[in-house]
View 1 (tube, rainbow, N blue to C red):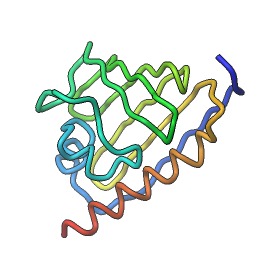
View 2 (view 1 turned 90 degrees about the horizontal axis):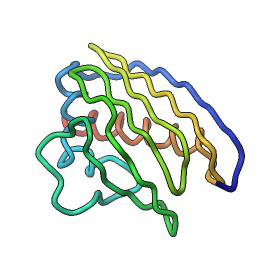
View 3 (view 1 turned 30 degrees about the vertical axis):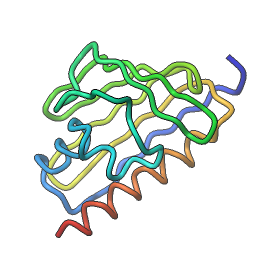
View 4 (view 1 turned 180 degrees about the vertical axis):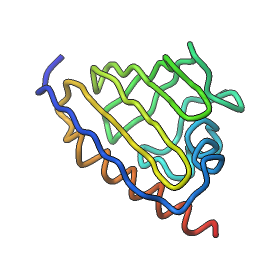
Length: 127
């Protein structure tokens, strides 16, 4: 894999319940509404589950995701192709934490920050 090893850990306060955050992260229909990379693979199930595989695109770069863990307050994705690494999400009442590590040509911390801001904006518009 070409690129550099990068890691980023961000935790934000967010005006949302644990259930709202769970829906936004584990339900593909909601995930597509705020995730900056846009569309997920066709034929996604109602909810992410361990073992599920899907792809997203960031411009010309395809990122393959394999769901390693999908629990009521935790999501861990193994990433390959455009990013070789992992992305972990943890959440609770009023907070969200995202940890991203991998080798990529993409600026991972910038993309991670933009996705968190997009999620925050999406949730604030729903209220």
